[in-house]
Structures are given as C-alpha cells and as structure tokens.
Length: 52
Image (tube, rainbow, N blue to C red; front, side):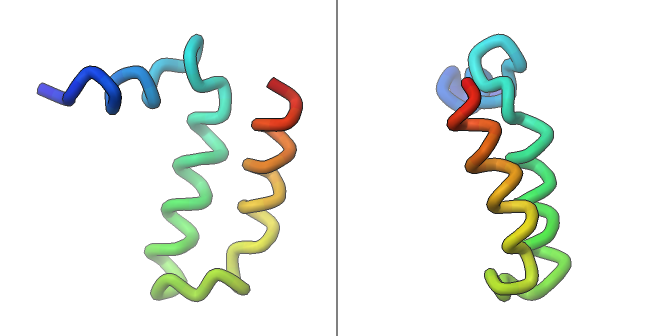
C-alpha cells in the first residue's frame, strides 16, 4: 500500500499533471539521468503546473 502523500500525487484530481510527471521520470531513466535529453518533457510538466 502506498503512503498517503504518494497516493495523492497519483490522484488526477489532486495532481492533474500525473502524465507529465511520469513522462519526465521515464525520460530520465531511459536517458541515464541526463537532464539535457529531457528538456521537452520538463517544459511540458512546467507548463502543466503553471496552467493548474
């Protein structure tokens, strides 16, 4: 069972940017944590957070 805080971060109603969060994290893992490879994903996440 997930801790309450982790569950809230996965809840689309509380965090409408779950898809962007997951995509950014996956990009980091896929690219051996080279941030410059994931700039597009970070921008999408940042724009999502700004919107909400």
